Length: 408
Image (cartoon, rainbow, N blue to C red; front, side):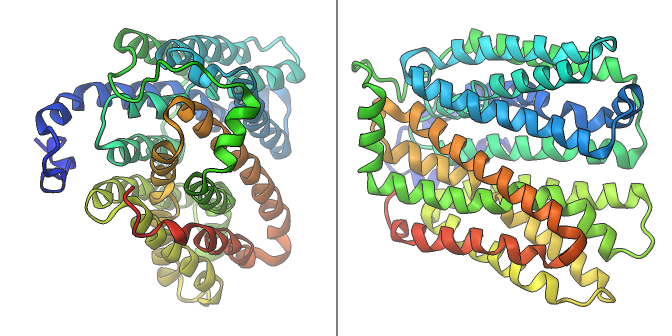
C-alpha cells in the first residue's frame, strides 16, 4: 500500500492509472536488480582494512582502486556511445552481460597471489561493466512506465544512495565478515541482478524501431537540443558537488566533532549520506505535482546555501554544523534523478540511451576532478572546501533555470 502511494494519483488526471499500478512490480524488480548490480562499486570500501594488510597498501592505494573503477566507468560509457550499444540493443540483455562480466572481474581480487597491479585492472573492468548497468538501467526503468519516470528514477537513485552509505553503517556497527566472503557475495548479488533483468526484459514504453543514427548524427541531435543541453549542464554542476561532498563527509566530521570515535564518525557519515535516499524519494514524489525542473532548482538552491554557510559556522557550534551537514546530505542528491528524467524526455526517443550515457560519462569525469581538488586541498583549507564545491550548484542553476515551468 505504501509503495502504491508513491504515485500521485491526483496529478495523473486522465492517465491510465491501472497501467501505472501494473508497472510497480517491474519497476521494483529493476530497482532491486540495479542495487545488486551496482554493489560491485562499493565492495572494496567494506573490506579495505583487510586489503591494506594483505598487500601492504597505504591509503593512497585505496584511492587508486576507487579511481580505477571511476576511470573504467568513464571509458565504458565512451565505448557504449561509440558503438551505439545504448540504443541498438535490448537494454535488459546489455545489463545482464555487464553484470556477469562485473561479477567475474570482482572475484579476481580474491586471488591473493596476484599482484596489486592486476587487482587495479580487475577494478577497472568492474567500472567498465558498471557503465552498462547504471545508465542503461535508467533507460530500462523508463521503458516500464510512461508517466512516472521521475518518480521511478528517484526510487532507483535513492536506493543506490542508500547502498553508498551502507559501508559506513557496517563500520559503525562493528560488523565484520571474512573479506573473501564479502567479495563473493557481492558478485553473487550482481549475477542475481543480471538474471532478474534478463527475465524481466524491456518494457512497452520508450522503445523505438527506428533505424539507429550514426554517432556524429546522434551527437548533433543532442547538441542542438536546448532542453537536453540545459538539463545536462545542470547535472554537470550537480556532479561537481555530489561525489566530492560524499568523499569529504568523514574528514569534515573529524574536524567538527570533538575527539570522535571511529564508530561515531561512521554513524554520522551513514546518516548524512543515507538521508539523501529520502531526498530522492521526496523529489520524485514532488516532481509529479510541481514539475521536475522546479524541484531540481530548489534542491540546487538549498545545496548552494549549505556550501556557502557551512564554513561560516564556528566549530564550537558542533550541533549546528552537524545539522547543516544532514540538511546538505538531503539536498545534494535529491535533484540527481530529475536530470535523467528531463534529459530522457527531452532527447529524441531513438537516442535516449546514448543521451543518458553521455551525460553520465561527462558528469563522472567532472566528479573525479572535484574529488581530487578537495581531498588534496583539505589539509590546507579544511572546512572551506565547501566553497570549492559552491560553483557547482550555482552554475547548474544558471544554465538550468530556463527549464523551470516547462512540462517535464
